[in-house]
Amino acid sequence: MSRQNLLPRTAPFGDGERASLDAVLGAASPTQRAWLAGFLAGLDAAGGQPAAVPAAPPKAAAPLTVIYASESGNSEALAGSVAKLARKQGFKPKVVDFSDLDISTLPKAGKLVAIAATWGEGEPPARAVRAYGELMGEGAPRLDGVEFAVLSLGDTSYAEFCAIGKALDARFEALGAKRAAERADLDLDFEKPAADWIKATLKALAPAEATDNVVAVDFARAGAGEDDEAEPSREPLVVEVVEHVNLNSSRSDKETIHLALAFEDGAPAYEPGDSLEIYPENDPQLVDEILKAAGLSDDEALRKALLAERDITTLSAATIERFVKATGHAEAQTLIDSGEAKAWIEGRHLIDLIQTYPAALTAEHLATITRPLPPRAYSIASSRKEVGDEVHLAIVAVRYETHGRARSGVASVHVADRIRDGAKLRVRLKPNRHFRLPQDPATDIIMVGPGTGVAPFRAFVQERRAIEAEGSKTGRSWLFFGDRHFTHDFLYQLEWQDALEDRSLTRIDVAFSRDQPEKVYVQDRITQHAAELVSWLDAGAHFYVCGDAKNMAKDVRAAVVKAYETTKNLSAADAEAQVAALERSHRYQQDVY
Image (cartoon, helix red, strand yellow):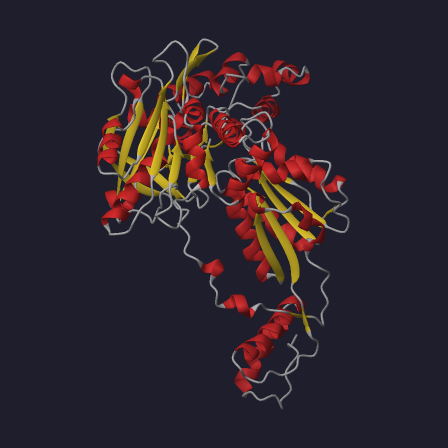
């Protein structure tokens, strides 16, 4: 069957050119032809050339609002992916962080995509708390006429898996919005299913195609390069360990490893505040126990996979369900049916499940039951301006005992016990643009980092020292550090003393919780120095918190609110408003986990 010629012989092209154009246009979809028509018309207009009037006026790009609630940066990255693909498909996307969201604008959104992470035990990310609370509150606006879709990120090792995304999905519907696509609840291995969901969702949100439409192209953005900014590679890099030092004394009950990593081809372009992901390996002894319990001790290929590729510690309700589906184990099914699975899981790992409910397992079963082994992110404790092509980390070894079994953190104990100088590690940079030094180096900074939460502040101080050496004026810096014992657990103590001497650190206040009968924490030091802290903040200082999200970060924030209340004689509500204003202006930043 011959292809129909679309261009008449009178078209201003040679025979070969007409044939080529006929081949392209004949195979193009209506949407592709519409886009091309708008593109050519806009291209002529942008170049100052007279443009032929298209058969139909360009169709305005459909507005699309993409909101994201992110802690580790994954939701933010996916929001950027939505915007890029949406722009190519004729939408005009607007990406908004929950920290900047004014919920009164949502009724005018028209089409809305929300990407939300769940943090801790079913809580919103720290930067999303305000807007999330307003959206869930009685004063939230109606969303009649808005079409929406929700992508939810979580971790199945937590009981409240994807709780925030589920809550947003239900809330949008309750406020009158129409669901355009089903919510997706994704685990740590989210990248491929998220990409598939984004494609399907944009298709569902797209207006009905009309063959005579000409799609508008935003030429004002075409040269801006916003979507073409250099992004760090998502491919892991191999680094060499050049320094492995325990920062705690030999008498400490903690073990914090200072790890210096060298990049063969130069360190990636990281900034103070970024993190580095480590791809760990599982404990070989635990792998052997699992293989023995499963009756697969002779399977060397499976052993290699369990060492480096599969998560063999996480135990969740989903894990038990997959186990029952794979094995048909009646007693494990009873555990689920009784509603006791959630309580039984607490403090247990995969090995407990396999040993408690023995069953004939295959390599395929274990692949189905487990999930991919995710990398672990650690705050970078160095500045490139000072350490060159190295990255420094501070990693505390996690060891504990539950249900009569010794347990350990996968990555932290891999680093502490099985990594030494000269060893190789796979790593990947994880930028965090929401935890950055002020653009003006003359701005004062207040840093709160107990334990390994001090890591990014070592990078901050190194950066400020290097900037000062280059001839620029730097602001004051105040560090709050805490741990258990002054003598055994004062991480980087000599470096802080040197920094105080060279004035790259203005002040340090410490809290060692177990050096006196009553425990003292960093939030207590904030309360003790409330008036001075508020004075710094009133003078424009930026406030940073890094470390434990469950208790410390909340207690520190409460202490700052109380500092405003007592120092300025404010009501509790007005003091809360002061701190909320700091957060909205990005002067109160957190990197918590």
